[in-house]
Length: 268
DNA sequence: ATGGTAGAGGGTCTA
Image (cartoon, rainbow, N blue to C red; front, side):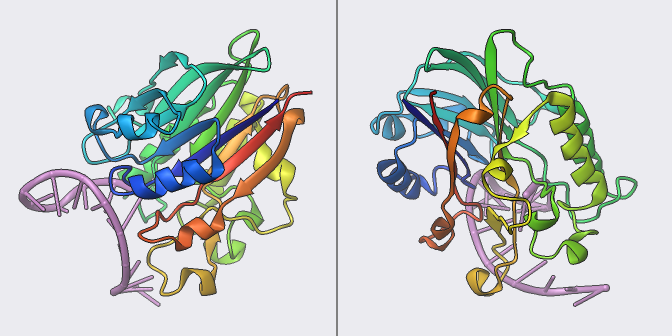
């Protein structure tokens, strides 16, 4: 009995519906978590995605910016949207599903990018990002008794040395500054989350999920970052069988700058 | 130090 969950920052779900449909037909995960859907709830292509078997869809949309959604073949219950930092952004949604006799809460996050300048005194967007991470420290993987937890999303931080193409050259670049990387590792520690991508791929290996639109040739330069993550509670991590980062999706027609990441679980 | 690209929505803002 397997379970496949995909996370993908889609950078406009309406513009990229054709590649979302292609991906679902080809990979066929049980659950797809999207970030940066960039539309309001009633603009989300519910019918088209449901037609592929994903009849359970919960959305936290917003006009023009941000926005997250969970599209699932399995029933979703107890969906919840938390307004981190109380600014009214749509950057989180969670819901419960059942698999292999387990109850699991799935969190889908879109953490603020934080702007260009890594100094909250002159860049409020960086302050917002740090405040968001601070608030995430209160989220425990063991928050609900008898319920496992999975956390996915675009966390906009590459926490480890080999999560970026050049650790040394990235230390002052937003997404890899020490205050961010230490903050995200503290979110994991305090919440007792397991980094499933790094459980599957050793920390000594380069691992990226995002390549900038601004590169002349993203594949040749290969200056990527691991901004997208899949975490779980400790009871679920032994069930992980595989992680698949679909790098080729970065080269598809009119691509997102993020690629889909899929975790596969196998019940014992 | 700078500029490079992309999307939404019709301003610039966000990334």
